[in-house]
Length: 88
Image (cartoon, rainbow, N blue to C red):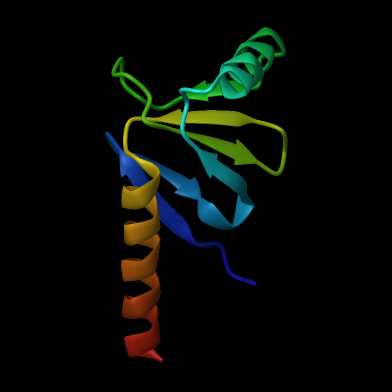
C-alpha cells in the first residue's frame, strides 16, 4: 500500500492514509481532545497562526490542526485520486 500525501496548506503535507477522522474543531468534545493532546504533547499545529478549520485524528494518536476545511481536504484527495487513475 502506497502512502497518499495531501497538501494541507502553508507548505505542509499529511499522509492521508494515516488519518482516522477529519472533524470540525468547534464542539466541546473535540476541544477537550485538543487540550488532552496538547498536555500529552501529541498536538501538531499546522495552521501558521490562523484559526483551525479542521482537526485530523491520526492513527498514532496525534491530533493535527489545519487551517483548511474538511471539504477542501476531501476535494484535494479526490482530485489526487482522479489524477492517479488517469495515469494507470
